[in-house]
Image (cartoon, rainbow, N blue to C red; front, side, top):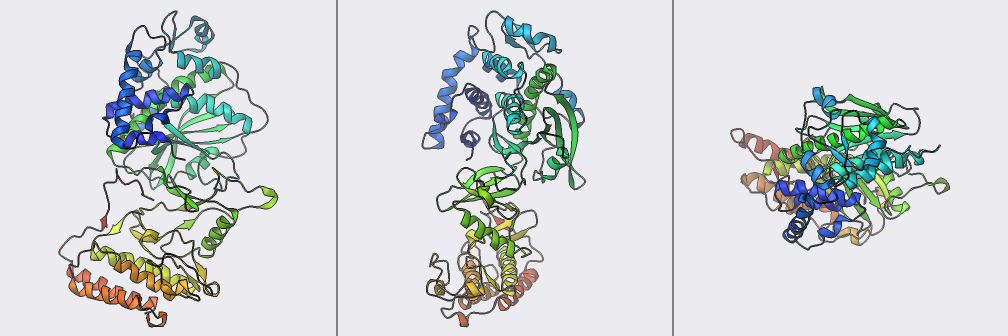
Length: 544
């Protein structure tokens, strides 16, 4: 489930208000309170009003010199966003922020002072950073409680690395530490979505040193950013933790070592606690760059589990969840059989395992991972882009026919744009079947599917009908070239024939579409065209 704090960055609030709220809501979580209760208002404007009231009510306590807890004030004042150059990043992270001092009790100070080499802490018999001191005393200073299993290390990793990060920055974590979750280790063990939106913090963890964690971390990060210089992450082999930056250079993702910590040593645990305050600042700066440059939102729930399937976006992949093992297996078999189909999304997951009940569910669902992540709200807005989309889709349909398969569910809801490759792509190929399987009725929405699917045997002409439906439903495309418009509408009429035998073949459709492309190419040699119609990327929450 997406973090409820994702709403914060979409609300009509100033950047300053959002930054203040990010810190304060993060502190609520540290105290074990649920900040989602502040997001229950029905409209964005009402939610913004509730959060402003929360700011106003909490401000006197935060600014009050007599307040017992200086945590809010300290974090708000010194954990300001910044993006250092990659060359100087390691030095920045390892240096105490100028002016930052964490006041703790004399008792806690006596425990930490021998390891506080940069003077981060100071004793106080009055006002103190109670929230930070509680975490320091309860999680950082005591020896980590670990055993012989990897599960026993998870709490230590979170207490020493990820929980401190949430103090300094609003980060929503997606954790895939169970290798049997059904996503086949295609995502990092930990992904931190800063502002609940952008995956700028990733990690790989293991009990022993049997694998190359850093190489694995790099291999799982396909670069999907437009402007940011790097992201941050770590690899943990037991309690040996290496902090790294990942960046894109020379057509591939590379890594840069930043610091190494032995978390069995109390001095390194205290040092890492300080470093995480700087990590929070850098992630905040990277988040602001993502906003300014309209980076794609990288994690969100596109569709909840209401119609038998959920869809979640995670980085450059799409995670789909199904209610039953059988449904998931059926979908996996379809995509496995159709490997190599052009202009169609790919299922990345391996064959699901059922033996001995080892098949795992996540959040009540059975998961499959798909690639690439596509823009599912893009629609053709010109004749050129419409013809291109129809040609791309028909190429996939022609391949399916050659393999004696039928898609059976062709409509714009299942056509998405690969913005990197510039290709229109079929998605959600879950109703597909072989010619031999299409012997009985397969009732779907009669408005967007061929009529014979409701009655009995149906073959590849249902996909031709779907191609015609794409033309008919592209109503927002202006008919600038009347000849092309006539060809397209005539083709859509032929594709929509009630008798399947009266419809043209997919190959015939492609011939007509190629003639349209030729006409348009000649017609538009001296003018530019706009290929895609979609909303402001910052408002587009269904990019997929």
